[in-house]
Amino acid sequence: MKFVALFTVIPDKDEERAIAVAKEAGAGATTIIHGKNIGLTEKKVFFGLTLEENVSILVFILPRKLSMQVMKALRDKFDLDSHENSSLAFTMPLSHVAGLNNDE
Figure 1 (cartoon, rainbow, N blue to C red):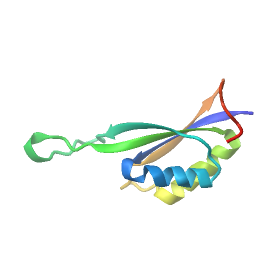
Figure 2: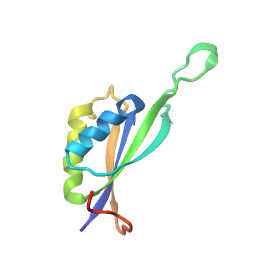
Figure 3: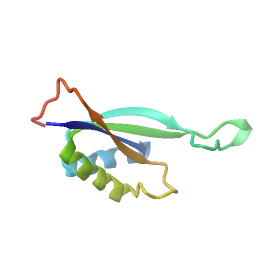
């Protein structure tokens, strides 16, 4: 079976909802990485500090056939194709996978 890693970068406030949407679409476990998104142009705020958006990077390891179904659910629910949205999703093929529990 061929696997892919589906990465979804989403604002922290939408993290739990995104996981629920992915699970509804068939995803199992996820790994969550917390980070900050500055964007292409820095936004200045008081005292010269830069406003950084806190984001969650959700990593799903999925069978290739299931990955597009999960990505479509996330695209539709979070309007990932909108230019006003700072969220995104992408997949990367995995050539070797070990330690994956398919029973989830």
